[in-house]
Length: 289
Length: 94
Image (tube, rainbow over all chains, first blue to last red; front, side):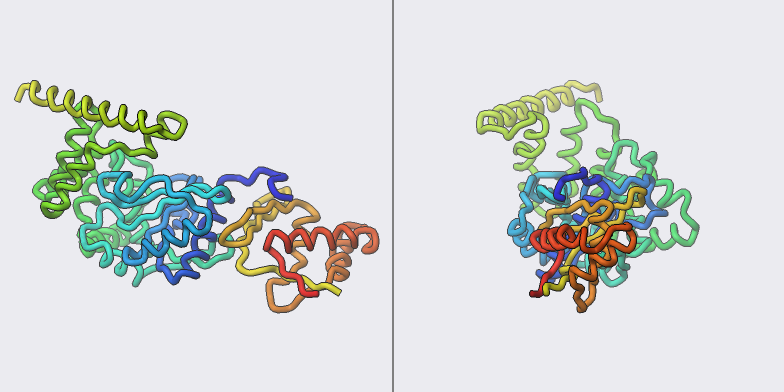
């Protein structure tokens, strides 16, 4: 009976959402299911339900939730501070359920993470996934979150999610999205998604969003780290970001190598990144101003 | 005589078929199971309420739509119901 027929990815993802919800219910953890099959079909650019599960967890309850995940066969692949400039998500893998992204912050909301979650939670809707009732963001919040996600891609305004969530949306829906962006201080990220960053150029985070939208270049990585430093709040956060810029993300190294990295691999990668950083700094120094 | 019903919580997805396929899993740990044809039919016979159903009644319902005799399939139905119990997606009361 088990494995007699391969389970389609979309079915596995839906069941995984339900499995995660049951764990959250048991632990008394509030979370929102985002993207993929949890999203409003009208707001999705693709009919594909996605390849992983994304949830946004109430920040104060993240540690408890992660503990529950680990106790139920979820293996942590990356930590919250190793994945992106925003330190926003940790990745987990389960032999039955596949990939899970646990978000403690949604990049683009510039209010305190707990305040952002509570705002979304007060207006949340519900979806039935594999028969389990799952909390999902309200429709305008879904659009804003998809737009902010798109904003982190090169050429963000051409991302397929932008059209259904903005250009093809009704004026009322766009107004609701823009109003929510104001309430959550997400105007800069929204501008990045819509290709209107010039309108918010003075904002501290504008440079960081601009690096995501730029085409890859030899100096882009350095630009991204400079923008991370600029957007980090306070000296301690800036120092942490600076130190991390030299660190090696073991998960991505493993993906590139196709095997778990050894200490020698990590050391070699560290040296490679130092050298790459040096080359980028040199290229920048030599660039005509 | 043993009686059966669906366990809780169980995740369930129905394929948009044909063929008629049910995917079920005990939550939160799994594993996901693929129930095809008569297996899916037996699953459909199980109540997801407080009531329970006997293997005789399940065999009778399956026989009614498969042109088999209940006695012919009874042993297979019981074995399958017990397998569902072992995977955590069904409860049995003896």
